[in-house]
Structures are given as structure tokens and as C-alpha cells.
Image (tube, rainbow, N blue to C red; front, top):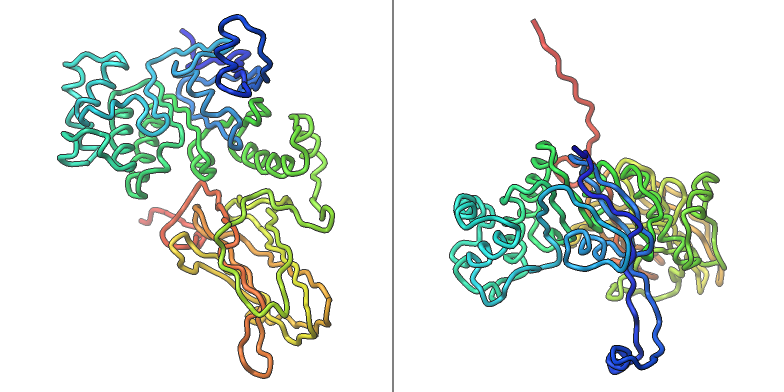
Length: 428
């Protein structure tokens, strides 16, 4: 009996792109129409063994969801093959497989029947499904009236309570509230201990690191590499940097770069920022000095806003002075998504001696520290202030300029990890 749960061989998915909708009709009628070709997946190969938890990561448009849809039979491949050994339960995009006009309980039976269960088998599992979903009397209402959170609750409850041999999850867990997410991940952990096969697509690198035995990295429809979750997350951060410099990227490019342990330097005097900036950031100050550039570096000196817990990282910023200023104060702050200030420091707190800066001078400030915050999403703020003539003044502040993702395989209680060393011993 094969120990392989999923085998993907030479998988290709090609889409024809037309200039206008009429061109597709013309081509179907035998007329010659110019179109371009886009490979959502190109010659992708990997195997998933029974009992493994495997993650698929990559940038938007890398082909992750397309791959899952082909594995689950939602899409047909252009060429190549997919072999599945075991009963699949899939939680794809929100509400997939649900009839919006049916009530929640009717959709439970619909989904169970599609997977291959009889009504009697679904009857046996109904109580556990309703208990896990915990949406009360809404179970008797049409699902078109559900909130996105209720949708996910019911969909996941069905997916994990029908006792699948293979569970496939695509980003859907990011929609529910934090308590329900914790409940889902606890169930996933139970599945792992039971030896079930799990395939996860997620942008949550902490979850990938914590739960996955192995990770497949896709980029622009091509499989770049596969390996341990830590190695693939590190490689993924290099992909983000490489994409900004050069949109054509190969596995050889990344491998040779990793072997050389290249440390990034400035490019055209502007630091690399392979992450999104906040279009709604709060910016204010008198602009007698101005923050003109910044970046975040991981422990290897690679620009990235995905930082592994317990690793060193550096926040750098450049400030230009438009007048002579004495005793400027440079600051960073990290807040959670609710706006609570988790940590932060400045050159005054750290007793850093600051020289007088002349008009048109530029200074570079580096804040290096260990990441002890719990895994999750945070916001970075930067500031340049001072006390001219004894009165506090803000030269320039950038609140919530970008996000920081803390990648963690182990979290404790509260905002930060004390990194305790625990000893347990028997005494006579």
C-alpha cells in the first residue's frame, strides 16, 4: 500500500488572455484571434506523504490556490497529473461549495453528500458539527444572511468533523475571530497527532512554521524549492527582495545567493523595502528635520518585515536636517493592531550621545535588538523629536508606516516571551 497521500507530477495550468471578451467567442468559432498565454502553474512537482503536514507559501499570484483547486478537483489542469490516496475534505475560499439560498443545516447535508457520506452518516456527525460551529439558531437561516465569520465557522466545522483522511485549508482561517482561530488550530493539532495528512496554504508564516513538517515554495507558477519550514520562510523573504530587484527569478539564483550569505547594501541610495507601506499612515511634524528613508533587516541583514522570534533584527532610518538642530531624539515604536504600544525606545532612553546636526546634513540611525514579542502582526512607527529651548517639539513622525510579522513556533502568555528555562525533577 502506498505511503503517498498526494502526488503532483508535471502540473501545468495555462490561461489564455484575450484583449476583449468577444475575442474568446471568435476563437471558439474557429476564427484566428491574437491572445497571450499565462501559466498559473508551470511544471510543478511534489509529493505529500501520509501523516505529513505540508504548507504551500508564495507571493500573491504564485499559484498556491490554483494548485489546491486542481488537487481537490475544483479546476482541471492543462497538463500533468494529480494522484490522491484518501478521502479529502477541503476548506477553500469563503463559502465554496455552499448554496447561499439553503439554510446552514441544509448546506451541512449538501456538503457531506458531495464528499460521499450517506444521510445516516451525516446524522451521526451533525451534533459535533453544530457544537463546533457554535452559531446558534442561525443554523436554520439561509447562509446568504451569514457574516464572513459565521461562514467560516460552519465551513470549518463541516470540513473537520466528517473525519477526512486528508484536510486541505486555503487561507480561510484568517477570517474568523481569534478565539475561533485558536479552536481551529487546536483541532488541526489533534489531526496531526492522529496521523492525518494536512495541506495548508497561508500567508501566516507563524502558523506555517509551527504546524508544517515541510513547505513548498511557489513563485509565479514555478516551484522554487521545498524543505523545512524555517529554510523555506528564509528563502521566501529572499524571494520578496529579489522580486523588487528583478522580476525573473530562478531557484539557482536563490541557492547561490544563500550559499554566498550576501548581505544587502543600499541600492541607488534607497534602502530596499520588499514589503507594503501603509497608505493611511499618520504623518506630522514641523519638518525642520525629516525621515527620508527606512528599512527593516533580519538577522542575516536581509531586508524583510517578517522576523523570527528570538532572532536579532535592525530598524534603520535616514533623517535629513533642514536647519541646525542640537540634541535630536530618534525613536521607534512597535504597536499591536489594536494600537497598544508593545515596546519602543529612543536615543534619549538609551543614553546615546547625539552631535549637533547642521543644515542639509543626513544621519543614519540603526536600532538593533532581539525579537522577544509573541508571534503575530504588529505596526512600526518612527520619529524624530527634540527639546529646542526646553520645549518638546516634533520634527517628523511616521505612525504605523508598515507592518512587522513575528514568525514564531512557540508563544507564551502576554505581550513578550521571558524565554524561561524550566527544570522539572523528582524529589525524594
